[in-house]
Image (cartoon, rainbow over the protein chains, first blue to last red):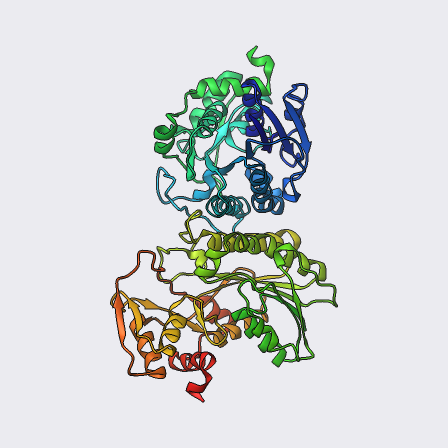
Length: 312
Length: 312
């Protein structure tokens, strides 16, 4: 197959590139490096199956190569510090960016996948969240540049499916971690790893009993590959429903990096992200998929990325 | 003042044109006639203060005239039959269209108003709806091309306010009726008027006890004018909280047009629009505004538009 991936230099995009190249496909990666990293492009530049276009998909997709089988739209700032720093770019890549990617797929008769997010559920009143839950999202708050951009992206993807006959997929990605996350991602896994690698105490907000669900990136990639092999146009949750306490994350990371470090407790900030947990019934039944990587394995692989010497 | 109004040939846009011209302002109207009507432009073409540009605001705003004090973004298909016929255009005028209008306002140092909608509340779980309610909207259903486009438009308007310092207003317009509605609007007031003018029985779905709130367009225009005179950036509901039963609408319209017509009852369709009722506390307190036009007066004026001979 010949695939085009927007956001190819991002955390998840780069893992898709790796997987598809390993399977013998040819790939065009597109990124503008607003939040993607050049090192994620450089990893694959020597591969004969990989070609890279530096472009802002919000302003067009300058692809003039051979026919495409798939367009995978993964471009967007995705962590709160990044999208709040670039709110208008985040809104644009959800609207104009998604539409340019849809139009490219339509011109090529290619299939299309949208990387949506658990953020479309907002601050949910239903736990865990099935795909049929409509969400509870503030349309004009500090997170709305991302949340509403992704909801819009879903809406226009379905409009292209229903009105232009495009063969589309929508995945809603829940919290994901692994190698090639940005160190400044701002979420708990990278925060703890960075603190520990710098020899600082790990900061837990609140008493640490609040839980989070994180899926390891390899599990997400497997779910994506499987969804490409079936025909299903409604959104599909891909996430890990297993919850761990924040304190467990801190302890596992601390113990891998430096067991002598302290864990310190600070008051919970007001805007602490709300809890989400995927209902993955559809992915289980449709894709025979569920996360396979235990937290300890995943954390070890992630630390190895940030500090290879620790795990060699 | 010098104002630019997108959607100037639409139902509400044309009433704004009329009001601002009457107040001695100069106006540029923009419309692409997807759902606007040429007759609404022709009404004002002879006025020296009015200029019209036929353009699709989703593809740019080709305005090169003198400085602007306000950009009012009212362009969009707004009734379900229209936006479902043009889902991609509806999504685009919410995203690209809103952004072109925001950019124009920003270039001119003009203030900006977004016409949003009660549809951002979706199928609400809170009655009546205050502006702080986040709504219950399906991101990928048949109405989502309109609902999500408007939620996105609110999000990008707030992003321009917070990150580019634009002086913005957001109104959420609840059901509105009056002269210059399209006959094929598809909502209950025009449906009943059309049936009665054609001498047909008026069709009520269900037993007619279900209620609707409709504001007369002059009341809406007054609220808009007042909001332009204060500084307030959060969304403001503009609607009529008084509820009437569907049967009352049918009876008033029937009695004005032809009291001998029958009212017939049909089973309620599955997708009957859900009920919404505005909480107008903010408009009352901030603008000292509330609807002034009683239903009988408003209906008479609306019938006069569709069949002038009946009310002369």
